[in-house]
Image (cartoon, rainbow, N blue to C red):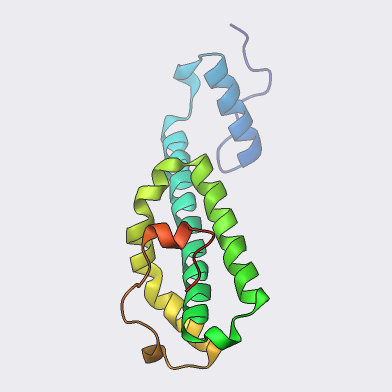
Length: 148
């Protein structure tokens, strides 16, 4: 087996080079040299980043849906384009990680209050003007044709 030419770098010193070296070690099946603890931590972090991104995009999508629902006469191309953009980004994220679809109901419910507050700020309506509980199913949140 080929040995790595460069000395192994520490995870905290040069992250990009560390990743490259870890990939080389994996491909060379030099498992004993892998930085297992940091690799496991980074892999867990990747899943967490995807969840946070999905959660954030769901919040923004719900905000646009709420604005359309509660102020239908003010529904604008900006709101609809913003909603379409979030759905496109969610679809891409789910294409890369389809298992995240099962987390949508929990994440949407968790972020719903923040979506209400954001919609209230944008519309100048009080938060109580919006439904107190999430009125949209996971399917509706993802459906590019659904707009209340």
